Image (tube, rainbow, N blue to C red; front, side):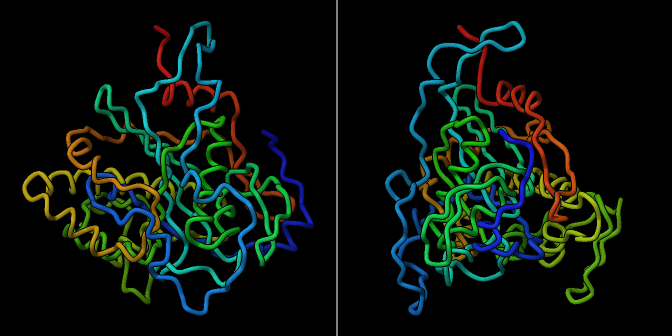
Length: 357
């Protein structure tokens, strides 16, 4: 993958980088047991005055985000003097947090799908009942597909991966294009499905389980929402506090996206553990969580069959991984996260492969 980001006139013509991109989320709660309305990206919630534009031929509904298996999965590969083979017991799902407070609706045009400011891969291994989560920096430079406001193809360009979701309808098309971009970043691993949640759901998601307990990693203040969190405090986050904790990013502070990513990772673990405990005593609480945020979700997968399975899985902070790399300031004065290719190869082996038999 090319690690330089060259300014592209196509990119400027198609989209002026959307400012702020301060969003959030963690949608991991869905995977621990909710019966989703598979593909609520369809007619439900569409605006009557949404633009009726023919979507260009693209990796849309045919696969619903499921990637076909590639030949590279066959046989073995060599790494650090040892042989490995792809772990066929795993299923991988893309989880995204989208930078809008609104309920899901079709975007006004094909440059306004919203940025995926939080991106995680959930890797489910049924052979040993483990979950792994790989976090992806929103500013990771990789190949994304462009289109104009009417959906006409404008080719591809290297840019921040969070922008891929913007080039779509804000629903299924945005998600499937994001799946393709992430799969390419991860050496074309198959992705079984996706789930995207608009960040406006965070307060409801948080309050549905009585708040989340954690130790504050950074000072977070928001006068409008009466939030004032101090580093080192042990707190139970309210809905508004959770929203600010997961969303806040100081735009004038270098590499603030990485700091926010650490907070999101911390919250994921804490939320999962609390929901796991609650659901063990009353499984209906999980359905309550889903019902509270369903209008904010776009997903290609019915997670019903995962409920019983995943509730028996263990998950902790040492099962969190991060795409390795470093943040630099690009020529256009935006932060760019460049992947360390050697370290990325090691990550792929750790998460998606197993020793050859």
